[in-house]
Amino acid sequence: MASKDRILRLKEETRCNILEAALQIVKEEGWQALSMRKIADVIEYTAPIIYEYFSNKEAILLELTRQGYLKLSRELEQARDRHRLPAKQLEDMWLTYWNFAFANKEIYQGMFGVTTSCACEMVNNLPEAERPYELFSAVIGEMMNIDDLEGDIICTKYYTFWSVVHGLVSINLLSRGSSDEINRQVLKDAIGGIIRTMAA
Image (cartoon, rainbow, N blue to C red; front, side, top):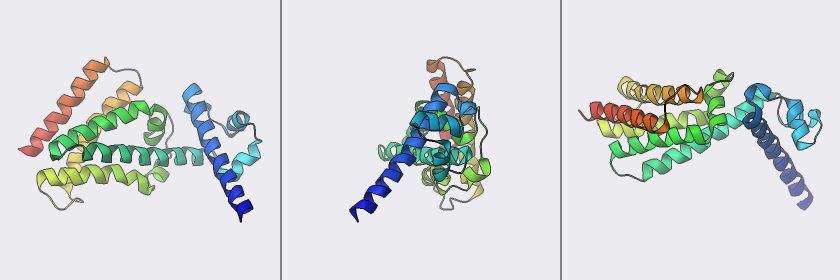
């Protein structure tokens, strides 16, 4: 049994090493530079070994994306739990989203296809990809006193927030934004403005 456990542990370590190597390559050279051969070189394995764990580089992108959504969701939950009032929760959650995007720039690019090709249909089918929407929707529903979280009003408010925040993130990831101070002010003004329309 100990031998079986050791084999499973080694397999999981190899899988993690592949993902870490892929992310290292992306951080240094960009998503377009990622290849199975480069990953194999970084971890000093042969390319066929990599294929035992991931069928292609899109599968690696999908797993990194899945992990990105898990991490983002955890951080959004922490931001929500720091406050009691829904307005404060929303403000902190969207600022947390912003911070996540720049602290995990390469992962964010992969999650949303910014500067890289996105396997959007596969990403949209990830259960983890739904969690941020669910977290935001629950708080929006609480603030607007709406129980139907699947309704058009909640969806519209979420996409209004997301369009502004993701748009500003994308502009800056493409190095077309203003200073960090101006960006944060634009972000806070936009979030505050949407929250005020909800409160009204």
